[in-house]
Amino acid sequence: MNYTNRALRIIFMGTPEFAVPSLQALVDNDKKVVAVITAPDKPAGRGRKLTASPVKACAEANNIPVLQPTNLKSEDFLEELKEYQADLQIVVAFRMLPEAVWNMPPLGTFNLHASLLPQYRGAAPIHWAIINGEQTTGLTTFFLKHEIDTGNIIFQEEEPISQTDTVGDVYERLMHKGAGLVVKTVDAIETGNYPREPQTPAADLKSAPKIFRETCEIRWDQPVTRVHDFIRGLSPFPGAWTTIDDQTVKILRAHIHKHSPDNSEPGKMSTDNESYLHIQTENGVIAVDELQWQGKKKMQIADFLRGNQLEL
Image (cartoon, rainbow, N blue to C red):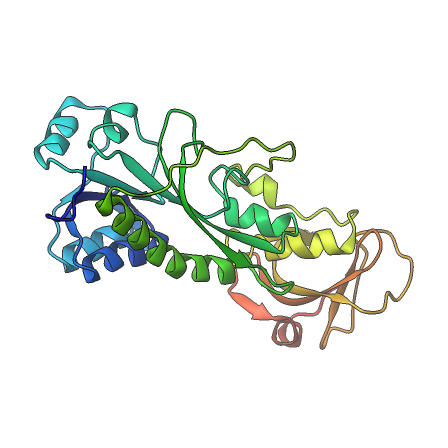
């Protein structure tokens, strides 16, 4: 069916900051977003005050109705969703949907995923691409189906990763590039002429599972490039950590030191307590540039050492 004679009725689903530019781009390009689905308000800050998600704030600023279901399978929510008579649903950084939700609109539901599918299916694609030392990642829009991140691909766009990029750097770029890809995808669906390419299975598929605290502990017995990529892939959030003077310390930025001072055991640390902190890996040395000591704010290494003498 060709929808060029009328605007598609769109429901947008998302919660965090990453989804906001996509929602705003739809509004700015005169797409008819009839409702937004987002997570319930959550306590935040020291006062634990109930706080709206970034997507809810954006929706309210644009006078778009907001639904915040606690149960996506509840009959009341499904009935309310049907009343909006959406032609298309768009998901950007939201939770898994039951089939009753993603299969509801006649044009289906498409998702914006921050990888070049089928690589890096899962919850943390940007993190794992950098942790694994990839030089390229990207974005994919695809239609939802039963198995997570496996539906037919609509469009993809590549994004280079430099050797100094952190997950925060790449996240920021993909967040804004993704907004353009979402609009491009809607434009194509409106014409009725758009790709629906099945995902081709690959022998070397890499996954992107959810990251937990234990995932983030630095293993100093690995090659220096691997350790450096690990630190970049977890900065600024949630942060790769190690233990120094019996305290948990997040290493947020670092670089590979050009000259290894000795052949110390992996994990051996050295400092002049003024300007540098070096940590030995399997085959080289990591120089810490920025860290966050347990219970303190993040600091440049020289600033930290001026106020803290390490006993290594």
